[in-house]
Length: 179
Image 1: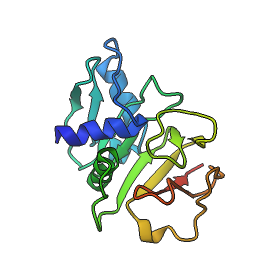
Image 2: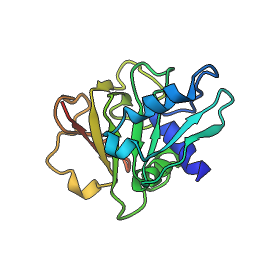
Image 3: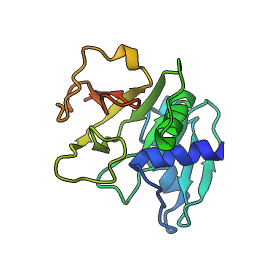
Image 4: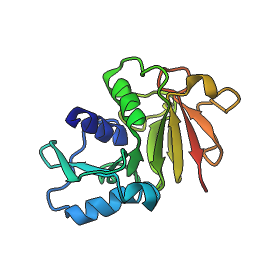
């Protein structure tokens, strides 16, 4: 399980994250809970990285969801919550392996996100031509490759409408704005 949680952190920004030692656990939990509706986040396991890069459990979960607080080192807000299938998808993404077959996952990012490159799942940061984007509050459907036909998959999408991120890769997923 600890490895799964590390992947969730990596998903939040595409690289290992460490939260400042001074960050209060209550503040981190509040940040993580902002990623999903209270009905989900109130029962979710909450995890964060400490200043040494070690995973900490801030709260045990009761509903099968996990949440991570905002990464203060990223350009924008990015707390996130997801289900178990989204964690398996994220493990495949980070491990550069094929996502699990037949396991559609769901993730919340209701505080928005500084999403990274819309075209390169491994872009480390904004660079000219790598289509770095920011998205307002949204949800994501991951690992549903055969269900995204008809949604825009252009490098520079209109982030106010549903679109496919990382089109043409095994990690393509549907981004769905909620505002």
